[in-house]
Length: 501
Image (cartoon, rainbow, N blue to C red; front, side, top):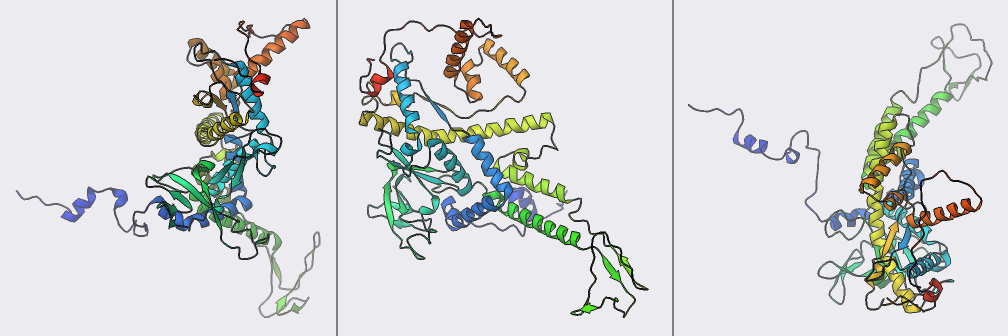
């Protein structure tokens, strides 16, 4: 028996294909370019994306709130460092060495020491960098091995804006390396140097004049930190985090402005006066247009045949707020920020949804914190230890033989967050600690605290309360530290009198 198919062979083949790749009357306006590398797509769009993103952050309140939310949650007041160098055999903490490293690290973070310009502390630099990456897509940090300010450590940081590396500068270096968008790379794609403009291309009004001469300096890769999020393999430059939302924010801003203009016009228009055909009001005419003045609290008598018509122009309408919420939800999804955090509107959420939103946000912030620490803080800290040891500011036993012992001992404490439901969460943490699933230090770290500092301060409180005869309502027991062998003091280490391993 013959079989009859309701469609032809070509239609059967298309039915087995990916629906997202089919071309039909519903997807005919979906024009996509041929497959291109990320760098090829970035090269022609980076400058415009960056400029539009910056314009929105300057002039749009929601874009500005997005950057502020990212900065406050990823960095906050700054990422703290805790040194945990241990003895090779006993694995006990080298208290004196750790105290000396932490002391010098905090001392170096002063603005006159860590910044080449002397205007930014390290916490300021952290906040500026994460804001620049989110707004412009990338930022560069140059490591300057030179003593600045009061610091004995010959190390400082220079912040270089992404505009200083021209994405249209593509060439072949004399050593055979490829220069792609001002980044010199070897055959494996590993950065070897960065070709930075001598002057900012937009700094026309200061010194260089309207047409500054293009001059570049070559900075070796070991002196540069390039901060950006890699989204595709072999990507050389970063794109603004607002890229996917730029068009939506612009359209929403235009719609909101139109509604405001319409509302102002509606408020200014009190009504119309209808007259019999062919007649003018008694108050006359100016420039071919009938004129009547209205004043607050005044009733005027109309001429025979005239009547007042008050238009019903309700702007903005009832759909304004729902429409704005839909647009903001799309923007918040693009930026990885919850709707409530972006809009500052909690009227549409309850406790459960708000808690779920906060937890989802915090997972996102922790990922960004981990990225920032591994790409910035750890790199700067390793450079700090190297220069502090070479300059004699720190004396670390065996550093020249095994530097990773000290470099890998850094524990980073980014900002944490308060409990959403303290009563329930504290009870749950207590049970988890008793079961051995987590430690007290883990719980403290989640809220951004330092367990050792809390325990030290708690011991001082208990001792002070006991000296006054005051009983504290607490179950915390401050254990006295075990007696250990005499170790070098932080002062002796700073002056070059390190202890034995």
